[in-house]
Image (tube, rainbow, N blue to C red; front, side):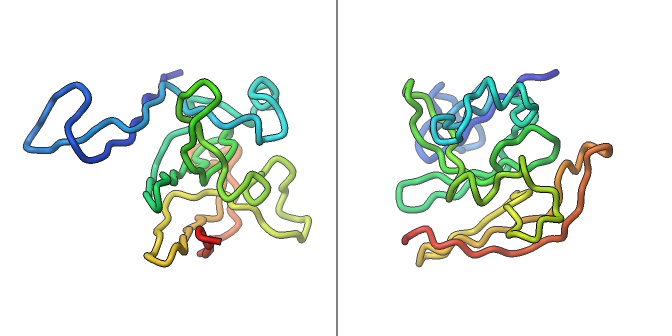
Length: 167
């Protein structure tokens, strides 16, 4: 396997003091592998790993938006093992940045979803979102799972979801 190194850059000067082509930025968050806020997810990290529902090297950041002091990030479900596809970055118990499913795990938990239950469909594959000045997040849910795993690929159809961040 490979090790994912993910970072979110902001304005200012790079932590390492490097400047290329006039671009400047600070490393705001950095991971060797994306970690989730397990205390709010019902089971421990070890349990998620044992079930195959958290495979760290399958979790990669794809989108980021900043609103009202918070960073919202997407982790598309390109392959199995992504616990949450839409998240907010928070400080973990050890002080390191972790991902907390946003608005919560229930609206994107696919562990029990089979597409036939008739209940509300969870967020499946969020690669992008936009936030308007009023605090409405427009989420593009591509409506598929495991795009890069032909044995596990499933298609449910895309949709656009509006979520109110403010209330």
